[in-house]
Structures are given as structure tokens and as C-alpha cells.
Length: 411
Image (cartoon, rainbow, N blue to C red; front, side, top):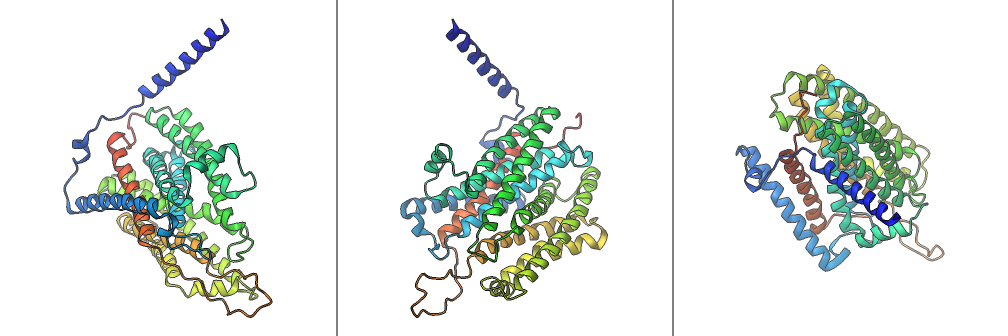
């Protein structure tokens, strides 16, 4: 009798789940719908590049499966390479879009509700792209998933990062579904929970670098907070790109109002970032601390650092301050440049941490003065990384056809 009741309850739960899924609004699309877009030179170029990047991803993964980590230019001295930087780039973008999407549906700012669905879906797509890239850096992703559950490393920042991001992705998907159903009450609940988990995961990602006691250049409390700040900045950059692409730079009044508001927030955030980075470099250099000051000076002399500063900080801030964010079209192009700068920011974060060789064990024997560690990604790393970008754009495009990502006027 008890077994019959349990089976009945299980069937009832299954039926409810099926009913819930079956009521998710979506558009039926086929291959014809996916190829049905305005054939402008810009759109054709993006389509060709996206498919080329996806093809590169397939080729890069195939090479990796045949040769393993020998296909990468990582070494024992420089174990973290381009794929780690690209993974951070995508998950930072995801957290930033989550924050932007939460402004409307979680915190109730009416001007930002029009981008909520688009931003939340973008956060799902970007973190999936990040997972796709990091899966071929881990070595054994399936084994990782198994032992992540049966043998958790509760003292490991990387374990917490992976676990929290998995939970975060789940909440983002549920929030997106409720947004599609116009169930704002539940969307707000899961959106707030997902935002808190996402911020915890992202701050924890910063702690992966902050906990590196052997690397004084990154050790400390700076990166756990820096990651949250730069995530919000990245999310606003992507919001401009998404809205600019959606409206072909011919923005309606509501979109202009929202984007001007975002520009003002962005100006404040970038100013704080410049303040943070300035004091980070000053405290790194001051006092001549071994393994920190010389690394900071070396970083200041690298072109990639100045590419990060100019593209992600100075150019966008100048355009915002020029007329308090009213130059929306200029901000679109500044956001594209800003995302290039954000990429250099992530690449510098990973590479600069490993610039200084660690002391060898042979301390009583003569050894040459260690040189700076040099690293340049292999073609396999580059193909997988560009493939992640291609997957991101492709998934977003399919989602824009499959779901209505615009704000529903009736709601």
C-alpha cells in the first residue's frame, strides 16, 4: 500500500514537471529560420566568423584529444595558460550580465526591466561557453564531476568555485524560465538567490589567486573584491553590445534612457577600478618586496597591461565623462573596445601571476639567476579559445530565435 502511494506521488511530481516544462513559451524554429537573417555585410561577416570559430573549436578539441596537454604551450613553470584566462573571461561576463539583469527583475528598477531577459540569457550562454573551454583544460572533466560529488575538497577554493558556479547556473536557468512565463515573483526569488550564489562563486574565483602564498604579486584580499567590480563593468559593456546589435544603433526612447543610466553607473565603476589598480600597483612597488615589486615594475612595462588600461578604462571613461553618457552610439564602440581590454585584463591576470620563477630546491649549489618566464599560447589553445567565443555567439543567436528576449509590453 505504501509503495503504491509513493509511486502515485512520484507520477504526480513527474506530471507536474512535464506540465511546467510544456508551458514554457518558445518559438518553433528550423534550419530555415536560423539562416533567415538580414544579409548585410556586417551580419554575413559575423555569421562566417562564428561558424569559423566553431569549426576551430572542433579541430582544437580533436588535437587535444589526440595529444593531451602536449598540444598546449603550458609548462611546469607556467601551468596556467590561455584557456584559464578565457574561462575567467566568460564567467566574469556571466556574473556581470547577471548583475545587470538583476537591476530590473530583482531590485525593481523599472528602466532596466527591458534588458532583464536578454541579460539573464546572456549570463547562461557565457558561462556555458566558459565551461566548454575549461573542460579541455582540466584533463578529465567526467572524473572531475564524479569526484566533485563523492570526494569534495572543502578546503579547496577551486572546488568551491566549480560547485558554486554549477549551482549558480541552475538558478539562472530557473530564473530565465520564470521570466519567460512572466512569473515575476518566482523570477525575483530565484534571481536574488542566483545573484548571491554567483557573487559568492565569483569572489571565490578571485580567492583562487588571492590564496597563492607563493605568488606575492596576487596574494591578498584584492582579487576577491576586484573580480566583483570588474564583473559589473564587463556586464555593462556587454549590455551595450547586445542592445546595440538588437536595435542596429537606432535606439528607442526607453532603451536610450536605460543605456544613459548604465553609462553613469559605468563611469563610477571605472573610476573606482582605476583607483583600485593605481593603489594596487603602488603598494606592490613600495618597499621593494622581493618577488612582488620587480614583478609589478615588469608588468608596468608590458604593452598588454597598457592595452587593458587604455581599452577597458580610459577610452570608455572619457566617452562617458564627455557628455555624461549621452553618446550612446559611441559607447557601443567603446564597449567593443572595452571587451578587448577585458580580455587582456584576464590574460594579464593569469600570465602576470606566473612571471616570476619560483625558487628551485637546490639552494646550496650555484644556479643561474632565474629569468622571466615567457609564454605564448599554442594554435590549439587559440583555436579552442576562439571556439568558445563562436559557441557563445551561436548559442545566443539560437536563443534569440527560440525565445522572446525583448520586454513584454503587457507586463
